[in-house]
Image 1 (spheres, one colour):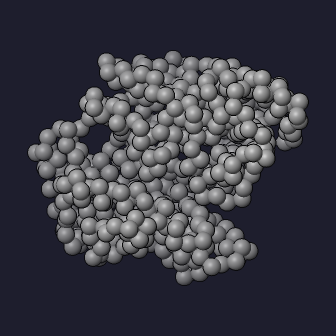
Image 2 (image 1 turned 90 degrees about the vertical axis):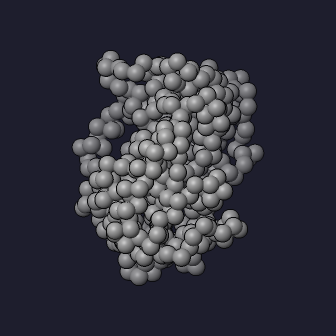
Image 3 (image 1 turned 30 degrees about the vertical axis):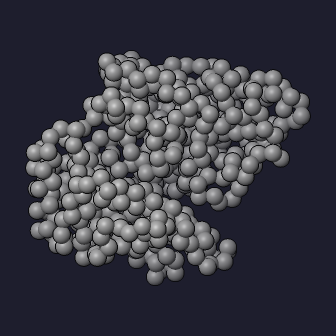
Length: 462
């Protein structure tokens, strides 16, 4: 599709609509890529949005002049979702970062899209409230979390971002503003358009305000670090933990190689690195007895299935060391190579061990390093392919072959392309293979209904 290239007349007109406008030559390179970099694409114009009315005015102009618009938060995505592949306007929402309301009676939090995930806990927990979604990238914006339906480590017990969105204010492609959902607990009033916006990666509308569900803050929490002789042993234990009915808050898996990379990256020792593989589990509840009953049953399951030990992390210092390392895994892997890309695949929980073993076997088959960690409790696996010293042509060829092999195997065992990072433009070919033409056709019809001229984040998702 052909889009209008911005002229100086357009720039002048847009400057009258928005307060903070940066022209292409003055845009920082950080806005040309996301967290995994890749091929850069420079916006023709960057607008640092201040409020909903300003966004509405800009979208109305863009709609009338057929100018593509790409919304962006902190740029922490991994699939090119916030990159201006086709030029046009980048709408930076990071400055819309106010916490607007904490409603203790309705258990809701209302925020602008630029509020960081890391800012929510300090705001609500002193009031005895809790926002459960816990993606690993705490510097991401809530708007970005909503855009990709981010999940994170607590999804096994609490669910994902979608489960905590109660209401949205959205600016449509033509500049109209709509309200979806609200503070009500139940809602069966027609099509659930709000849930279409969640996970749509800015292709259907621009979220300018979100009302999120809160829950009472658990009074106690404890983590278990459980070393296993092999990754297979560790992963094979997870379905048995889930079947035990002692539901952990989080079930993470990690390999020794990733732990060592995190140690080097952080410059601080990990509490244990004697084993080749680990499960990291967290339990929360309202009493110590409740938590101990749950983790005691799980500890026995792990020991019966070959675990070397069960290390209880019951001090703030040890908890910080464990979870800070877990939060640094991505950056540690990234720092250990020249370039990397990620397969954010999700598979049925009972297939996790098989898929991880399959992925590890691709190292020798394709001559690339493969590193993995992820959410064993919900089947969302983060598998990283590392370039190291491969030349550009060889790297691209092998990367494509590895991705095709991984996604093909995921399809065979009932998996999907992305568990929480979205599709962007990088994963579009694999989404088509996974869902098929009929489903993609329905998605394209929804896109056209929301965005008839295709200006919102074009070239992404479907």
